[in-house]
Every structure is written in structure tokens, then in C-alpha cells.
Length: 368
Image 1 (cartoon, rainbow, N blue to C red):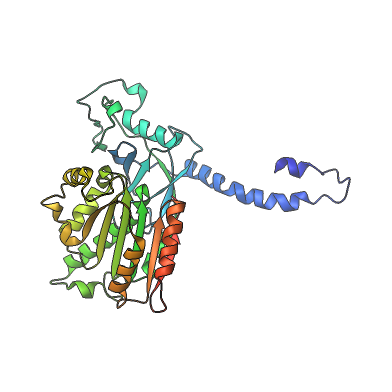
Image 2: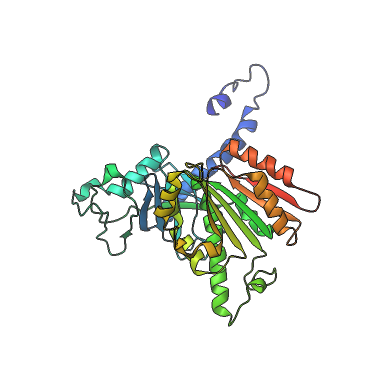
């Protein structure tokens, strides 16, 4: 832009006007990095309260909230000064707005995210090389570490004295925020794309839990009306989550546990698809069920409508079933998808085919 502005400044072919067209958008472009420089100078970094390695490539971070006000489904930009002062990357908040702390899940898919994983796994090199039972621990009383999964190639890890702090810029709006416009919602996610819906479901469960504590004998139907203390017009929520294997269930173990404790079967229905297995008789299906603790006791989730499937969803059948079940609730249904582009096109087409004059599916997608 600067070179273009200089070019033609001699006005050999006519009046020099380039600066009037280029300078305003260039100033607007600079506003964001300048705002973040001011953030560095005025704001203190956020302390990392806890971190967990939930599978080989997913790091969970719990951060101090520091008064951040946000809505379920929104995202923030994170900066880790120990890695780079100028790199900011967006991550959806998986915590609910009424949670005490913020949580994010970071998948290792690039140079920066790999550096973040290594940083929180190994700690600072100046702290020495003390090892303890292959488990990451923290000697700082304000820091905690809880690892469900440690990659095999990283079994020997340093003892941490602290967890590096992070700068936060946000929150930023996201399409999934529009879920409150609909009485019936369908959330469709692939892999790490489930993060905004985890935040929304946690928010709903927190509201249900609070409402039940303040009511002597709450009736579930009254809690779901548009003018109740729950403050949410939602009648029904479906979550369809596709992952390759069983490890992903550890990402939201607490959320699934809450579903087991709260009887929200009339409101929330979760369908988890394991795409690495395709046939009902496949031995991997039994192994997946055993790994989850679903066989036998099923973690009390079946009564709360948590279903495991093997293979890929049949969207024509899915939308047909939703239409039959929810036609009496409302005449429209919001679909929110965080899936790969080819998957997104297929879901959108099937939703359009399933729409009728008295019940329509409204499709919204988000890139992940």
C-alpha cells in the first residue's frame, strides 16, 4: 500500500489522488494490531489455572475469567507471549457464560498450536529437568495440572513451576449465538467443531440447575416456556457429533456427567457418531463401547438420550424424524453446523429437501 501511494506522487499524468483512496482502508487495517499493542501495555495477561491433554492432539486450558463478559458460542483471540508477541489465533470458548473460569480446547494442527502444546507440556527450559512419574505436575499452589492423556512419545515430562500466561482479545460474535431465536435447535459438529455447542449446552444445564435449586418442585415443561426464569425459549436441542474414534469423549467428560445427573431427556438429545467403524458387527464397536464405560451401566446417559452410532448419519432420516417430533413445538428449526465444506453442502441440501411449508429448517454454518 505504501509503495502504491508513493507511485505517481509526481503527478506526471494527472492530479495525485492515490492517498485519498488507499490511506483510509490502510488506517482501518492498522487499527486491530494497534489495539492489541495497547492491550499489551495496559492489560495483564490471564493466568492459566489448569491444563489437560485430552487426547494426542487436543490441549484443554482453563483460564482466569478476569471479568470477561461473553455469550455461549462466542470465540476469543489468544496470544502466548512466550511463543510470539504478534501472533493471535481464534478459539471458541467451551465454557458457559456463567462458569467461574474460561476454557478453550486447542487442537495441534500447525506450527503455532504445536508450540503451545509443547510449551504447556514441558514448561520453561530454565527450570531444569526434574521428572516425576511421567505425570505433569505443578509446584505453584495457584497452578494445577490434570492430564487424561499424555502422548506416548512424551511420557517423560518436566515438573512445572508455573503455567505460562496468555493474553485474550474478545469476545467475538459467532453464528451459533443465534440459537436463542429458535425453540428447536440442531447442532452438527465434526471433531473439534463441537466446542461452541459444548458452551451452549453447558450454559443450558447451568440455567436448569440454578432454576431447580430456586424452585421447590419445578416441573420441566414450565421451565422451558419462553417467559420462565430460565430465560431461554428453547424447547428441544439435538447435537449430532461425528468423530473418528473414542478418545474424543474425554473432551467433554464433565458435560456428559452433568447430563447423567440432570434429567433433561425432554430437552437435550445427543447423537455421537464414530466414523471409524461402519458395521454393527464390527469388533471395534464393542471396543469403543467398553472404552467409554457405556456397555452395561452406560454412565446413566441413555435415560438422558445419549446415543452412540457407528458410521455416518443418514441426514434424510434424521431430519425426517426431527420434523415429526417437533412439528407441534414450532414451525421452524435452526440448524448450526461446524463441519468440513463437503459435509456442509450435503447437510444443507438434505435440510432443504426436508423443509415443508409448515416446518422449515434454517441452515447456518461456521468455518472451523
